[in-house]
Image (cartoon, rainbow, N blue to C red):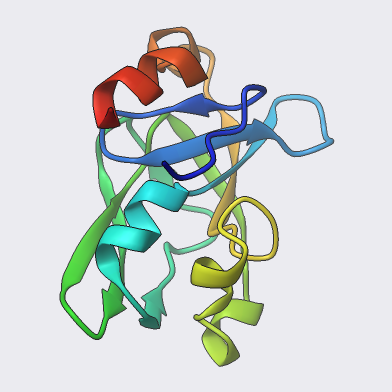
Length: 128
């Protein structure tokens, strides 16, 4: 079973959400389970910085040697940063999905939907 950090929140679409260090900003990536299912990641299409997104919106995509998968915004807010390093090294998603492989940062909207995300235990049961 892949690792599922207990201190993060998760979406049913296999994204994780973590505080980014700035009040009201979260960092988002795909889970170890998702990167493993995708296989070797070869390209990432980033969301546009400054764009407002609703929870569930498609904000980009991850292309692997097996398939292309949409990236969803697990919560609502404004895209404030993207992980530019993934343009040159998309395989960081495979090597370190909860660290160097993060996808984007989002400033949370007032009604962001964070409370509706899954705990690590709930996500573990989902992918069980």
